[in-house]
Length: 235
Image 1 (cartoon, rainbow, N blue to C red):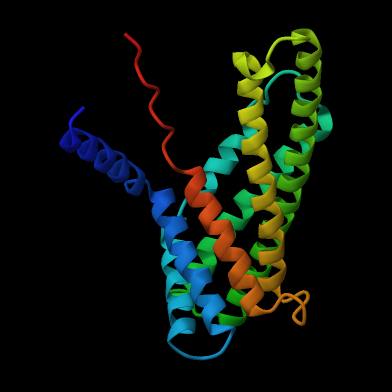
Image 2 (cartoon, rainbow, N blue to C red):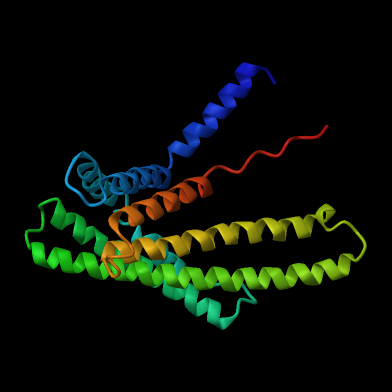
């Protein structure tokens, strides 16, 4: 493959990546929380960027609650423990509610809905829903990592003296475990961000801390949305 072909292929992947609404939302999220970190809650350019980007992101999320509503009523994989099913469905329900209420927050902050006090109340309720969904996501990832760890140990015993990293099934489980671990880290970070936005611990989770954690969480989301590398063809 020539250099031009390789460049064209890489640009094609970039176009595909940036063409996703979810990717653009997470990039805007990184800008939003990066600005929050810089402003530390103080008036100025950075805070203006934080507020305007936050409002713009709500447009990307219009009707997005349908995704988690669909996940809520979809069947779960066979063999999943009841506790993880309930936690997963709770996460879907809370996240769907957060995204649904967030539409009314957008209506209020854009001036379409005039009741400012009720808009702020709906905003806080929606953030509590997001906090709850992040807690549920953390518990789900912990449970799934535990299940993967147990199955990997069982597979190691079956492979005995063989190199486990040569086994395709083991590598697949290891990749899933790594993905789950990254999702666990992100969910834990999002809990801190939600606590900061709700000002539940203002002395500890300051706007700067909230911004820093939100920025890292956004970068993780951007990474998770990267297209999977194409497998090389063997002749």
